Image (cartoon, rainbow, N blue to C red; front, top):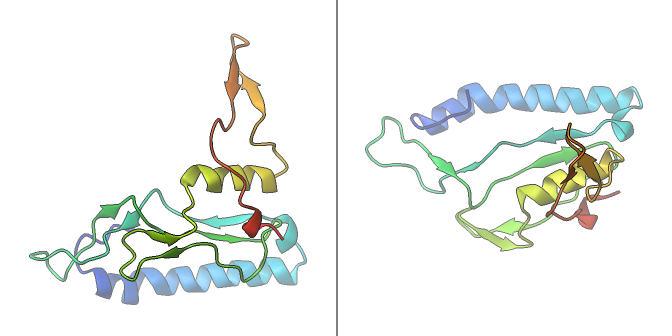
Length: 143
C-alpha cells in the first residue's frame, strides 16, 4: 500500500514511484496512441496528502496523513494538457496559490463526464438529493 509511515524515502524510490511512473505513463501513452485519451478521463488522487516533514523516531522516517495539502493528476477526457493549477508553500504544508477542494475536483470530473454537478437525483422514496451541493468546476483544468 501507499502508507509510508516508516521508511518513506526508500519505499517511494524503490517500490512505489517506479511502478506508478511506468504504469501511468504507459496508460496515458497507450490511450493517446489509440486516439482515445481525449475521451477517457484519468484521475490519480487519494483521500489525503502526507505530512510535510518526516516523523522523528520512526524507522527510516515516515509521513502521516495530511489533509491540508496534496496533489491530483488529471489527464484526458477534456483536461488541458500540461497545465498546473495551484501551488503549495515551500514545504507543501498548505496551499499558497489557488486552493482547490476535493469537491471542486469531483465537480470538475462530473462536468468532464457530461454530468451537470448541479443536477438533483432522487432516492428510492423520490426525495431530491443534490448531486454536488458545493464544489465548483475548475475552468483552468478544461481544455
